[in-house]
Amino acid sequence: MDPYIKQKNEVDYVCVVGGANIDIIGKCQNPMVGADSNPGEIQLSLGGVGRNVAHNLYNLGANPYLITAIGKDIYGEKLLKECKEIGINLEHSLVLDEKSGIYLAILDDQGEMITAISQMDIFKRLDTEFLHKKKSIINRAKVIVVDTNISEEAICFLIALTKEKSIPLFLDTVSIAKAAKVKPYIEAFHTIKPNLMELQFLTDRKISNTEDMKAAAAILLRKGVKEVVVSLGEAGAFYHNGESYGRMKGFDIKVKNTTGGGDAFLAGLVYGTLQRISLKEKVILALACGALTVGSYATVNNQISEESLMEFISNQEKSKEE
Image (tube, rainbow, N blue to C red):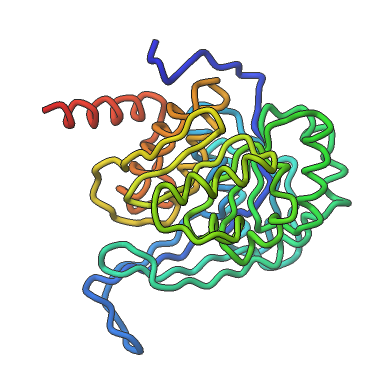
């Protein structure tokens, strides 16, 4: 059996609480010209941090329950229909007579985001009153993943539940603005996945090199976080859990679309936790998930599976030896 993958228990599940929306992505064909119409390619697909994480976990063979809010509009119909076809469990989600979440992004000709607009008001309805009704489902999860699209009050409710049951709580900070919701409670999270700017915000510390990352991560570990994994984009990742730390290079792949790469990365960390492997091994899985995602035009690469992930990692390691 591959050292990264162990036997899974089909009864175990991950509870993901967060956003599910439609992604509308426009990619420029040539270097972008401001205040003008740029030729390019426009794609519409399912998105949302929570939904993307759940989708990637399903592709990896895990059993994700997604708790989100979806509107009764054409976008909501698409979300419900396609999530069901994929196999994502939405039976514990809200369906409301409101506008579904929409994320509109403009990418340059290299696939890097230039700007984006998000319509996410519907996720305010994932409040404590609703989540309390789902307490028994949440309490039996092996891992809980939360993104900061939901309210501070809802996040605090989930923190209280996971503390009571000692369930690992994973956090996707999403952005600096949204990370402000969790900064006062950061010690409650088992694993966090910030980028450099978010790490600086969470620790009030300027970061210029690897030693700075180590020191900043140590601040969060002293507060109670168990694992800090810093996403560095194409440069790879830095990890620290108090016992081991390191910086790992990213995998060599041609970037086509960076949207969704961070969500796949987090899914890799969660999946590695379900497999009970070391933090270093989890980061390898996460980097591979992220690379395979940004190497495709889709927000979630449906070619990702246990087998394809292992094959990709093996091929990358062989190419380094040659």
